[in-house]
Length: 197
Image 1 (cartoon, rainbow, N blue to C red):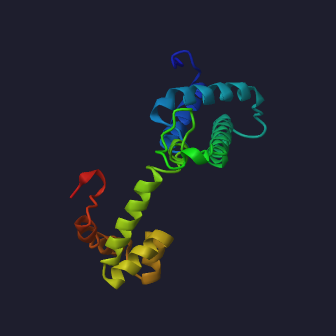
Image 2 (cartoon, rainbow, N blue to C red):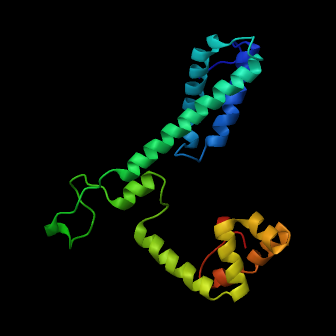
């Protein structure tokens, strides 16, 4: 852990900038809350390596610090995205023909496509569960009135802001229309996030 009582004022500024950036990364690109301290230390050490390259003729020190931290975070995000892409492009072990009829839980170390996708952050649950969920969502969506169905499709594809601008309505009104869909989805067994009614 880095002690701040021995840091200069500008290093404390850098530490605050790094913490702010790290806080915004938690939950994204496979970065977990447990990674916060390690990531903060890594970025601070990289900042210290580059701190000697400051040229006062080119700008203020705080601007230099912000640029260094931003560039480090961009580099980190690129690396994480590349790792996630490589994880999804990795060849998965094939199931031998004699095992094709058996349950997919193997004991020889093979991992399933579901496990790989969930570990890479590309899926929240197994493919079979996602398929059942998709079927249920389609059924609920089909039970909506045509105008609500159209609004729902457009919000998913274009976002609330674009739909509100196109309809000449406020975003609040679009959210009110989306709110009207909740009872229909609840009839099909969907509960709002966090269990809020």
